Amino acid sequence: MNNCEKYYELISSLLDNEITPDEKEDLEEHLKTCEHCASVLELYKTLFSDNELVDPPENFVSAVMQDVSAHEKKKSKRKAFVKYSVVVACLAAILAVSVVTMPDMFNLQRYKDFFNTSKDDNEAINGRTDYQNMISAIDDILDEAGDDTPYFGSSADSSSQDSVDGSSNAESDSNTSQGSDKNSAALTDENDYFAVVNVSGTLPSIFKDFDMEEYDDGSYRIVVPSDMIDQIEALDSSDVSVSLNKSPSESDYILVIYTP
Amino acid sequence: MTKTQEMLTISRVVCGDSKSFEALVVDNQKVVYNLALRMTGNEHDAMDISQEAFMKAYTSLETYRGDCRFSVWLYRITYNVCIDFIRKQQKNQTSPIIYANSEDDFKELEIPDNRYAPENELEKKELSNSLRAAVSSLSPEHREIFTMREYSGFSYAAISDALGISEGTVKSRLSRAKHKLAEILIKNGTFSPSVRQTSRKEDADI
Image (cartoon, rainbow over all chains, first blue to last red; front, side):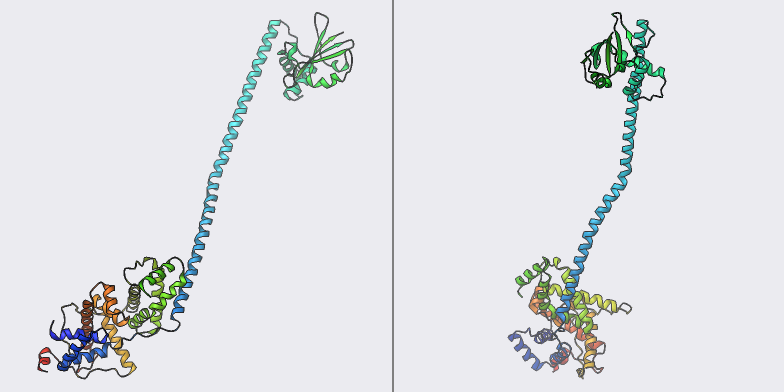
C-alpha cells in the first residue's frame, strides 16, 4: 500500500463518520501537503456524500402490516379449505369404499342365499330320502304282517295328513291314505299317541267318519288327529275317558279304543 | 431494540402473534426502504420492493436462526428482491460489463480538472443513476459492502459483525469499493471530459 492509498481509506472513513481522532489528525496533516488526496476528498464528497438515509413514507408501516394481515387471512382461509377438503375427501373415500364393497355384500348375500337354499334343498332331499326310507320300512312291516289293508282309514288319514304335512287336499286319495298309513304305522305302542281315549257304549258321532279296526277282544281302534282333543273332552260323557300321554308336539294322533 | 428483544419479538411472531411483527418493521424500515430506493432510484418501486421484502421476511421468519442481526438478514432479503426487480427490468437489455475488480487492482485515480458538482436535481439524478449502474458492475464483495454502508447505513461494526470480518477489513474494502466506483464514473464520462492526470509523482512534486 502506497502512502496515498492509506489516506483513501481515511477519507472514506471521514465521510462515513467512522474515523478515530488520531486518524483524523493524521489525514488533516496529509491533506495539507497532498493535492491529489484533497481532490479525492472532494470527489468522494460529490459522489458519496449523499448517503444520509431518507425517511420512508408515513404509511410505510401500516402498508406492510396490511400485507401481513391479508396474508394471515388468506392463510386461515387456506387452512379452512384444507380442513374441509380433508373431510370431503374422507367422506368421498367412505362412499367409494361403500360403492365398491356393496356388490360384494350382495354377492355374499347371494352366496348365503344359495347355500341356505342348498341346505334347505339338501334337507328336503334328505327328508324325502327319510320319507322314502320310512315308506320302505312300513312296506316291510306290512309285508311281514301279510296284511294289505291300510293301517289308517282313508278319510280320517286324509285330514290328519293335511294337518301333519300341510299337503294339499288336491293330492290323490291313495297317496294320502298311504301317507297316513305310513305316518301312523310307526306308532306301535299306546304310549306313542298323544292321548288314549276309551269309549264305551255308544260311539260318539265325531268318530264315525274314521275307519275302525276291529280287534280280537271285540274292541275297535280308531286313530284321530290330536287336534280333536277339545271335541273329545267336550263330550262330557261317562262313557268316555281320556288319558293324555304326550304333548301334541310330539305326537299328532289320538288312539280311540271303542268297546261297544 | 437489543438482540435479545429482537429474538423475543421474532419468537412471538413465529408463535402466531403477527402484530408483534410491527415492531420489527418500525425498527428496520429505513434500512429496507433506503436500500430499495438507492437500488431502483424510484420511490414507487422502492415502496413495492420494501413491502415484498418485509413479506418475504415475515413468511420465512422461521428460518431465521439468529446468526446475524435481524437487520442484516432483512437487508439481504431486500437486496435479493432488488436484484430480481432490476433483472426483470433489464431483461431485454445487455448486462453491464463487469469491471475488473480485485483487492490488488488499486489504480491511480484520474481526478477531473473541472470538478463535477451536480447543481440541480436533474444532474443529481443523473449522477445517482450513473452511480447505481456503476455499483451494479462492482464485484459482489465490493457491491455488498458498499450497499450495506451507503444504501442501508450500517455501521462499520455492524458490517464487521454481519460479514464476519474485522473492522479494519471493512474500512479497507469499503475504501477500495469507492475507489472502483470513482474510477468507473470518471471512465464512463460522468464527469467533464477535461481531466487532469495526477500521479504520485506529481503528488510528490506538489
